[in-house]
Amino acid sequence: MNPIDRFNLDIRSLSVFLAVLDEGSVSAAAIKLGVSQSAVSHTLDRLRQALGDPLFVKAGRGITPTSYAVQTGPHLRQILTELRGLALGPPFSPAQTAMTLTIAANDYQRELLLPGLAAVLREEAPGIRLHVVPSGIPTPDRLRRDLCDLIISPHPPPASDIMQQRLLDDRMVVFYDPTCREAPNDLTSYLASRHISIVFATGERLGLDDNLAAQGIQRDAAVTVSNFAGMPAFLRGSPWLASAPARLHRGMMREFAQAPLPFPHRPFTLYLLWHQRYQQDPAHRWIRNQLLQVASQID
Image (cartoon, rainbow, N blue to C red):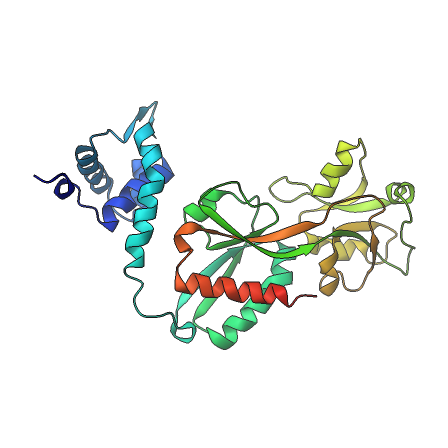
């Protein structure tokens, strides 16, 4: 028998192998694929026989991939992407497309970029529903497992299968209520003030706090909130300070005055992240281009 004939290289077989590789469990892979555990096990048995490798072996109460499986995974993932590409069908038509687009973003990124995207979808692709979820700390796994289609983040994960595109640059500034105080004019007056600080739900702090901590400096936080949207209510009518991205002056921080930080702090870049399997997908590519266009029009 021809060796190629022994390996039924179809989308289902590759999907099963990659699901087990991603989930690290036959049962979890079966739930993800919506099939029985026996169906997953049967497909793995066929692949083991065809490829001449155990692929997954027991490790305690679970399983672990063999070196062959780990090394083969990226190649089979690319093959699956190409096979799916054969079934893309007719050219993409935004007006005729019905789908749900899931984007992970924090409240600052959401307010800055996604209303503009929603306006484009409303006019040109009304069948595309926008679902926004918290971004947290972006990991390649979120995109690999299709937990979201796109992530907006200043921290692109170092993974070769995660694509990235610059959206825009921003910098941190200090916001204050001009009816209650003046801008801090140096680091001493900045640190003498009390602050509205952020600790995200993931436990992550602002890079600004890490920068100060590296210098042995800590801000006096009068209030700590879990997102940028929590700042205005506490800043309004108080002598406190809130350090946040400058572009928030367009939205939730528009009623406050702003001033440069009284110490050096590097600007940052927001990136759009997606998995390489969608690199050539017409709908995905059109949506990415619309978001890039929205970002290019922000002052």
